[in-house]
Amino acid sequence: MIFYFTGTGNSQMVAETIAKYIDDRAYSITGAMKRGAYDYALGIDEPVGFVMPTYYYGIPVHIPEFIEKLHFDHTPRYIWTCLTCDGLTAGAGGMLDQILRQNGYIPSARFSCPVVNNAVVMGGQMPVRNVDALLDRAQKRSANIAAYIRERRMGNFDDCAGMGADFITQQHYGRYKNGRGTRHFVLRDSCIGCGICAEQCPADAIAVGGGKAQWVKDKCYYCLRCINNCPERAISYDGQDNTYTFMNNRVEGEP
Ligand SMILES: Cc1cc2nc3c(=O)[nH]c(=O)nc-3n(C[C@H](O)[C@H](O)[C@H](O)COP(=O)(O)O)c2cc1C
Ligand code: SF4
Ligand code: SF4
Image (tube, rainbow, N blue to C red):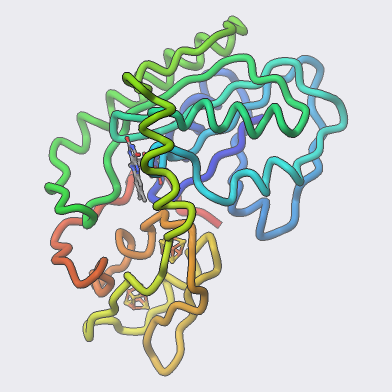
């Protein structure tokens, strides 16, 4: 059983690719939280996996709530995690392991998978090039991760953590956890009020009123799906130019 959170599809692609290779099922954490679906029955010796993006060298802010509410009919014996990223997870995998332990789970294996950077409008990011090659590489890596899971390998296989992982996370994660202000999302006149962003926001932070998108919560998860998925490119971060957007086109849309 695999649980994934995704903003722009990378973590969904990795979760579904691994699921295909180990003959498993991948469930959306967004869908589960929206439906209040927290109770799951596991098969005998069924592994449990968690896949999600790295945000500011840590994990998406709502994951602890999901793990706290999660309930299985029996304790899973093999638990693995995989952080998708742009190349540096730092202390994110350790943070996720700690949340699991706090909730009585014993993580068995930790993985990471660089995919494509979806933070295309933050910090003057360059446009993403060679998307297909990057997605191919990530799917190959997912197949390798699946082989490790099949063999029930134990250990820390996150080779994107880099040097001084916990220190990097300590330095940066607070800006995400305490920030996440939706006031940074600036709507352009080109918004046609189609409602896609509101329907698709995992945090239910957007509504359409008066024919335009508006943010109805002060803070959100910062998944950047709204910016990347708007057909009119009508949302900018702090007014930055976002000529480039990224959505993973190897997965079907999310609930
Ligand atoms: C707010 C934000 C912060 C991010 N921080 C990191 C980071 O610390 N390290 C990294 O390698 N990638 C970082 N990324 C890139 C994402 O982790 C990466 O693109 C991920 O695969 C996106 O997954 P998704 O498509 O499932 O949402 C960040 C992206 C966002 C939106
Ligand atoms: S911001 Fe984009 S996705 Fe949202 S309602 Fe406007 S046009 Fe549609
Ligand atoms: S408002 Fe945008 S960035 Fe925030 S959670 Fe919703 S879709 Fe993601």
